Length: 294
Ligand code: NA7
Image (cartoon, rainbow, N blue to C red):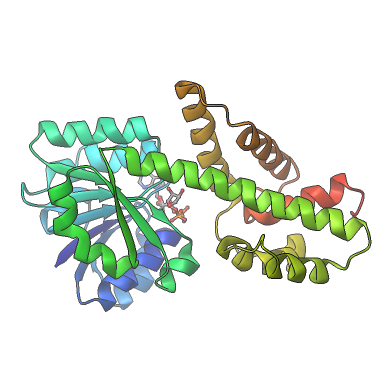
């Protein structure tokens, strides 16, 4: 199929090769063109605007930072809405504000066009390994049309329900993920301060019932300490999702006390200059608070 891909940041760089490998033609666009170079070398085509990519495509994906970015590329002058065909489908994969996502989808519906929310749960690593899961919401018939293409990105594709619910679920999952990783950091710090070598503690956690995929791939970063440059999701990106979760909780009257506490620890990461590190850098915050800092 002809697929438009808008947003060639870390996640876009991991997803596009999977679409190319599945035999699709990918027409990419990114605000900063230089980032497209490695994908152009692998056979991706270039479009000068989201509109141009949409005009040439049967399916268009976007994967960008936040709701403001989605709005800009979807609805702006030269946006997706200006180029998308009536039979084509636009899927936004970004983790964004569910209400903003619904309001953008409503603009597409008014124009007789189809937009779905289709966030991915996974990192660049899980995408590359073909392990990512996708959640999709919006028009079910459109979902069924695009499902085979989604399966090329990740093997676990779920239909969630009405417009906006997939991104709402994604925010909830990301909040849970941060709480889980912070709990791990807190536990390892407690063990380490008590005299258990860090690598022994981490190994035991990963062999215990606490083990999970996210802890397995982040554990090596804890072992490397705060100097690790590897990033599956930096503090700033992760905090964006925590703020979305806190806002949803406030709007709907659902208390999220663990999410609120985790968010405070991300503030501490930022205060210590760790904002661009993977958010597992929170381990460093625990070490400093616990007097293990040298
Ligand atoms: P990255 O690697 O930080 O990439 C962010 C992308 O979003 C990148 O392509 C940016 O373009 C793009 N972006 C940001 N703001 C805009 C605006 N205003 N207009 C157009 N494009 C924009 O993030 P990831 O790929 O890891 O993550 C993306 C999403 O997945 C996000 O929702 C996460 O929470 C999960 P640039 O290259 O800076 O020009």
